[in-house]
Length: 221
Length: 208
Image 1 (cartoon, each protein chain N blue to C red):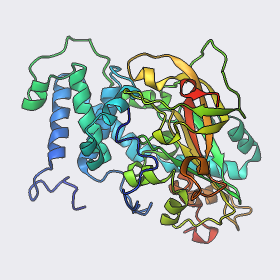
Image 2: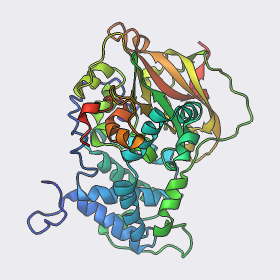
Image 3: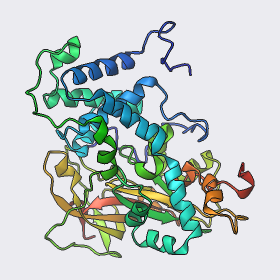
Image 4: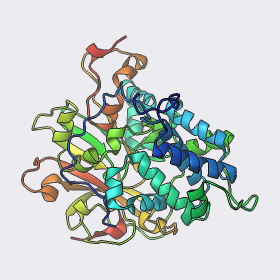
């Protein structure tokens, strides 16, 4: 979707003002620790994919999205997600009172002693797929002009531009479908776009932007 | 910290966000969907055990061991797995190598994708709208904000992390570090140099 999250190339957000690396705390508010941990622990229940979680975050009201800190966005999205998936009811969330307990054993809960094992293992998204890749490293490709309503990982700033395939990663879970709960693979490539093709003559002639794009985003130029 | 409510509840009421997170946690724990001890282990893992020192180890090893550098170039995921820095948000790794005429910079314009097993959780600025919006259109301006001013003849490559592939920048080894051991080199490898917004710390800056 053409949401507020797709901000590559926007102006007016101002200076970065980074905190010095040595001085920056990992969390700026005490509640952020729990925001991170709750988001991960709820994700581990297996009720939604990372793409579904991203889809909910980027569907937040644009005003809320751009005015919230990162962990605020996570909590806003998590609050919606737990209700949408029936983990909590909106009444429970509003009244901060449990009305109905889940059936025992109906969820795979992440236990403390499994945390390190689970996060050290991770969850690879590479997938064997039957069809051969349509493109090869060195090919020129057109990033399609597409504007899907749902989740997608093709940023607006590359759509309609021609780039060159510089890496092929094999089959990977296709984010657009994964966000709808369908886990299937498509070939994934890293595509290099020259900065001047994207941004015009003011960009430095040598500079470029690399973007990972799945095959359904690409066409022959 | 002015906004850190830990321990000062007596003088300042908890923020709306703190209350919301607390309510969410209580409900999920009471329903048996979240193990409260698991929350503590998750925080401890990313606050104390998984951080940029892992990535610095990878870089310093690549600087001192040509065979390792070759393995890192050929298959970064496998080479990083050798050092046990694997897992969530680092399942598929690509290492990009800076040189005298080439500088790499990593961003995630769409969210905050970042190689957790080697760098830990991303800093706040990495997740901020100014960085996400500007890194792709004005990388040299962004670099200058970090004090990194590149000559015009240096090529800048920006890597926008739009898939589950994660990128780690291999910064140039600082001058004057010939003969240094891996242990001596690790402190020179800043987190920011592995995102690509800065160069590695100079040899003279090694605080021993």
